[in-house]
Image (cartoon, rainbow, N blue to C red):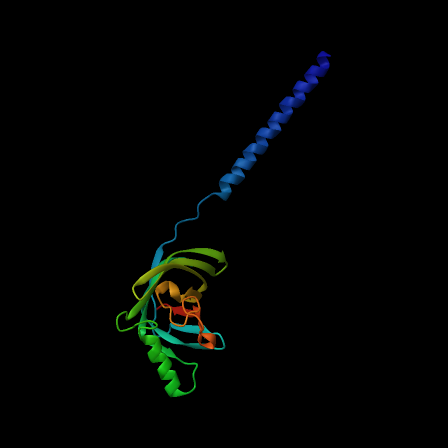
Length: 214
């Protein structure tokens, strides 16, 4: 009986010793995983307004229109490839349609986009996209969180984009969609007007933004 007790005690001590070593190893692994990477320096890069482009697309029930709009100024702040913040100022007077072939019809639509029904560019000559933070989705692709200001109205937005670097320049391609009615642009919206038929304009506006830094 006494011999059996000694055997049990011996096995218990051996088990506790192995458990202690395993815990020590797990603790070491946990410490290694939570080790912080060295802090990268922040870089401020000015956007090249000549090379950078914005394409817009708006849709009706039966067709769509697209065009361009110019960037007035902008900067992005980065740590490595991670965009920490940034802003893009857009020249609303530069908006134009490029999808209509007939010159007169194309110019008529451009004038309509500039008046009070849409962007009222005489009173609000600029719009702004601000980036407040970003999360990495996968290698080279991020989700951005920020604000969009149009006609003096600011609302939060999020959008996705890729970023790459060549020498000292950054290049980013962003796709963005927003509901224009949140910025008071209700003309032709089926949510606010009835019996529009094929004259109804969908609420979402799509932007394809290509940014290149100097």
